[in-house]
Image 1 (spheres, rainbow, N blue to C red):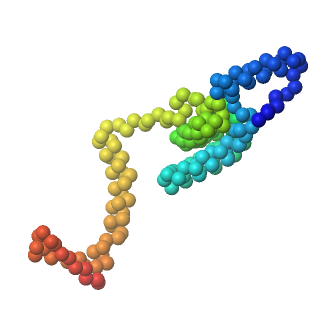
Image 2: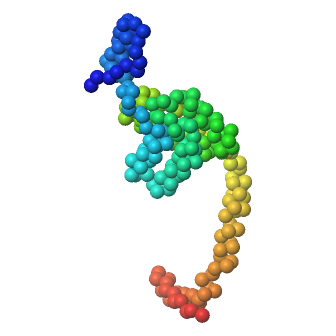
Image 3: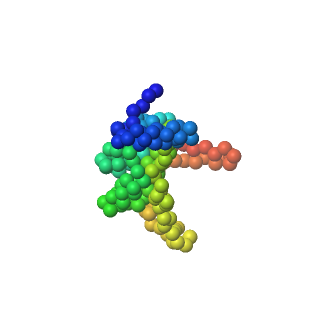
Length: 194
């Protein structure tokens, strides 16, 4: 298939140099068709999610939410895959953080974006993944503290709600449960409604 150069050249020598570079890219397997990768990032990431049938429903829900909140309405989301640069990804990430989006959410959105771009590279749509920010997909771990402190936080957070549940809804309030232990290996019970 014949392809045209992106523009005309001032001299025949300039055209020959351009053609020589394209031929060497083809021989090395580095040439990228300039017409592939012309799909907006937001559409490609949405398709990337849809093409993964083994994703858990919760993951699909999370990924779609990340696309809607942090990719769709941005300049990066409007760009074609082939036009995205590492600098634009850095700016997108910095803008999200400056807008007050939490580090965890930005890291999740970045990981999703990086995974989609990795697939685009594998599919030959782009030559290199522009998501190359070291540590951008990782959030610093919050130290938990001592075991006693973790246990206390658990007790403060979960036990009051459990206690409230058991204080308000007790099966014995609705019926009498009588246990017959004549045979310890096979206990039996009966429920007597009030």
